[in-house]
View 1 (cartoon, rainbow, N blue to C red):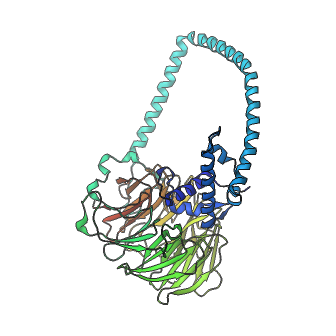
View 2 (cartoon, rainbow, N blue to C red; view 1 turned 90 degrees about the vertical axis):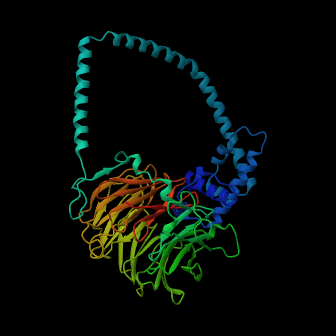
View 3 (cartoon, rainbow, N blue to C red; view 1 turned 180 degrees about the horizontal axis):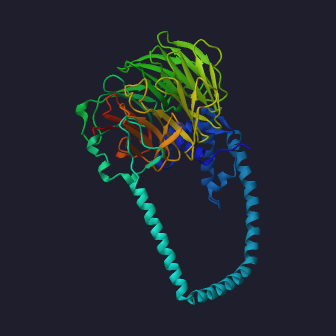
Length: 561
């Protein structure tokens, strides 16, 4: 049977109302995840069909709400309908369906009332009997001997003593980093807000609030050169902010230099131009943006549009520059990935391997990369090759994210099947199957440590963020859980390591961003905004952290320990 969940329906109605000039925070959901998840019968619905679906649903609701003789709740009427009915039938047909189902429901309710009346006397007799039995039991309780009471007291004392021993053992547990930077001991540790105090709250004087976007901000990225921060929003714009050191400690919002990169094509308030992804090239001279209209755009650091890359037939869900900066890689809802020749401003090669929308892409080196999809598959591709050079099959759900380690030898993936996996090009089966989360894993990140990094003496670890509200750190050499970070109360959408690998930032729908010290084994700072956090990122120097929020702002935090 064709079905659509209440969460998906809420999202559709929320987007339609928002684009019509209404706002309501009750329906704020994860932007990128909601785009990915909105499907009927397992297939992603085209934007036009979604808008038609919402318009018809709202039109019917409005019609029913204005009926003066209505004796039923409109929400109840609306629940009579199947999603396919709203898309394929007009208002009059919908009304006929409701009328017939109302009659049936009334008959059922009348019959239920009669049965309830017949049972009322019987229930009263049963209640009297139960009350009598309770009184007898109560009298028995009063007659308990002092010996029984003494026995219970002794048992309580034993339980209390056992609890004191357990608490004492737990209080003795400490995180002891090795001198070489290797995290912890053999047993995984839980970091929670219980380890923090009010002293770790980030003061407003340490935060610069960037205002200007008129819709949720779903992506942000620091330029690897200079003090430029890019942000992408559902308002059909990307923005490049200049964050100078003298802008700090301003508190609240600050009048900063900003460039607005408009993605509309002669139209306004169009869902199709929402900016979903952005990425700077290695030199920080060019910014690439991916949009829901299926186009990738390349801008200069001065905000000038250099080229528009059009070939995808669906929204762009992922976008990455290669290290050399001559190719741009995009993954789309149209099930394909495209490598673009940036200098020639044309498609170098399009890859058609997936049978579902391509959710993520990541370069292994300058000519090969990995892609993941809703079809549960991972493909490793190479420019010039017609077939995949490697196929990784093993996930039982949508593969949300893929990331190569700093050396390009190991690939990490995470999925809706509640697992993360580590793969090697040397074998077909996964190297490690990481199982500790209790809900879907949304994203993963490698630490900038270990071989091939600027922090070679520190252990390489993997961070995974999940809808179960936790972040977990993994020993990738042995496939073991090191730590579980349990400070959030809602799904965690983003994690980012500091450039020196000593800290981890995490952002959640609970409106908070936490910063964890991996050496001290505790949360050292936290900031709470007024909307869900969709992405967090560190600047190159590691003294500033940006976080983009669902309430249309970007916050830049001063991080100077």
